[in-house]
Image (cartoon, rainbow, N blue to C red; front, side, top):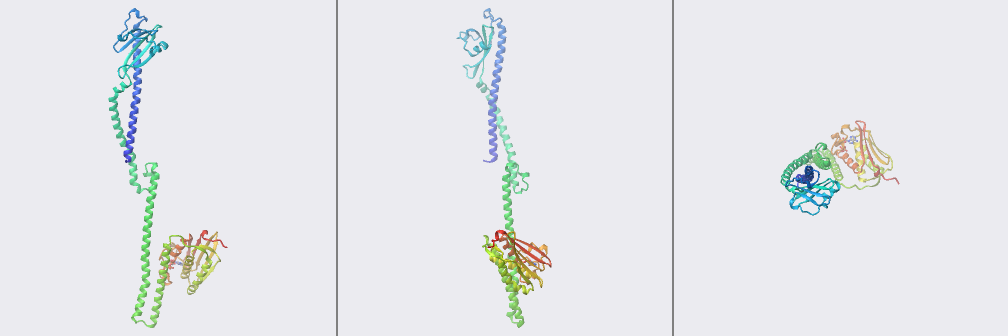
Length: 458
Ligand code: ADP
């Protein structure tokens, strides 16, 4: 059943109940008033008759007037009927036990209502003691409650039908008024910014909040999806482009050698170029594989207890030759620091940072790798005296294939993926990376591993 129908029906039921109860109550009140009116009439009648009755002796021949509707009875204090205007019932039994007579003898005035033979008709008795010897009683037949009801029934039915009609019309209107704001809300729900404006009833706020949250969640997921899809496409385009350049060079040089027009010296030079480009391709592919592995590994990486100093030592030893080629001094400062981490990733991390620090350095420059613990955390800094990174590039250097100086990166064998890999590894270890750099002065990269990654020294 629709909400509207339900509310309308319930309002109509309430209206119906109200009509019935009101009818019954007003019938009852009307009946009470009717009774009072009859007794008041009887009292007046009795008073008139009493005056006519004079000094109270029936023997003096006073005729007690009586109409058809009004029955007058005179009774002595013993209950014997002395006179009755209703001739048929003149020879009646003793009246002493009749409630109204009993009451009149005791209190002066007595009343009673008794059901008369006729259906729905009652006889109303009003009795009054006169002097010490007599009780004068007047009686009248009139409608009882039921008869009154039957009499009023047509009017009651007409009025009730009218009221019900009005009720149902009103119920329809009220239902519309109650439901309309909800319908409006349902329509505007997708555009909700401020609830208070469109949620019509406070009871609906949790409901609206839930829908809004779901809405924004779906939107967010969609945006994230679109975003990652865009990044994926960009990455694919970038990879293709990066692969194309060395391959074009390799093809070109090998063609020249193939044609046999190159001199001995040229051939050696071309071969060197081919090897350089092949190495670049290898680096690039290695980095891409590394990144895709980091991307795929959804679950926790395999970690173990390891001495970060030992790993740093191995890395710097390996890089000594590169450093020497760039005329840069590579220093490692610190001692044993235990860390709970992935060994390969730590090697990759330190190598990438040191490699950058060497490649973007100046002749005679220094690269310092420092390891220490601070407040339970392990801190690794790689500091160089190189060309630095302008502030506006800080955020972007961690993006895939983003380079500040493209030619320098390529000349030194950069792939543009080093810092992207670093960022990934840092994230996998719940660590924090900070970049500090000043152009032509140097760069410091700091990585802070949280305490849960550190293992107590044994
Ligand atoms: P690349 O392979 O080109 O070095 P990275 O992702 O490692 O790629 O670094 C991105 C860019 O950030 C580099 O191209 C370079 O411009 C800049 N960069 C990284 N490390 C340093 C550094 N130590 N000093 C100066 N510039 C740096």
